[in-house]
Amino acid sequence: MSYKALIYEKENGVGIVTLSRPERRNALNTVMVEELTKLFDAMGADPEVKVVILTGGDRFFCAGFDLKEQSPTLLYDIRKLYRKIDSFEKPVIAAICGSCLAGGLEMAISCDLRVAAEDSVFGVPEIRFGALAFAGGTQKLPRLIGVTKAKEMHYTGEPIDAREAYRIGLLNRVVPAASVLEEAKKLARTLAERSVAAMRLAKYLIDTGINMDLDSALKLEAEVGKSLFAFPDAIKQEMGKAAQKEDVYKKLFG
Image (cartoon, rainbow, N blue to C red):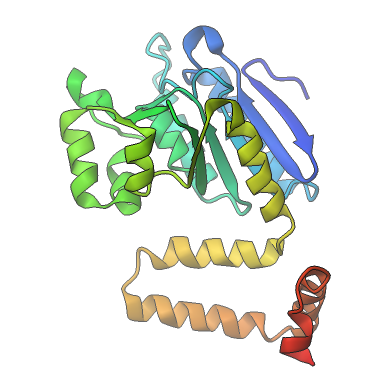
C-alpha cells in the first residue's frame, strides 16, 4: 500500500513508520491521521510485525496539529489515534530528532519507549496561545514524569532539552542525532526476540495497574500470572527459545 504522508518499511520483525510531511514539519493533518490509523490496524494484524518504530526522520519529529487544517473532526481523530497507539498490543518506540512539541509530544508519550537525539527539544507550548494540550497531554504527562514537573511544563509552556527530559523520565535513551534511528532499531531487535505474549501481558498489567490502587493491581497481577501458568506447555516453549541464549530452561523446569 502506498502512502501520501508516511513511509512504511518492515525490517526483521520491526515495522518502521516515518512521518513524511517535511514541508509542514510533520504536522498532523487529516490525511496523515487517517493513514496512521489504518497502518496501526494493519501492523496489529500482521504477525510478522513484533515491534513498531515511529519516527519523523532526522530533522524533526512532529510539530503537532497542522493549524492550516480546517477539519472540525481533526482533534477528535487525533485523540482516537493516540489511544490506538498507547493501547497497541505490540511495543511502540518513538525515535525522536529535533523538535517534539505540542501534539507531537502527545504522540511521543503515547508510545511505550522513547529514544531521542541529544539536541532534541520537548514541550507543551499551547499555554502561550491561550490553549491547552487536549490530546492527552494533561493526563499522560503527569503519569509519566510526575505531577509537579508536568504542571511546570504546562503552566510555563517552556521547552526542555533532551538531558532534562531524560533526567525526569520522559526519555529512555539519549544519543547523537545521527544514531537515533539505529539505536531505536537496536532496541527494537532486542524486543523482537522476546516473547510477544509475555510483553503483551506486561504492557497490559503496567498500563492497567498504574490507574488502580496497589492492592487491586497486585490482585490483577496474580490473576493474570495464574492464568498464564495454567498453560505450562506454552511457557516451556517460550522458555525453550530463551534457553538458546540463557540457561533459564533447566533452572525452571529441570
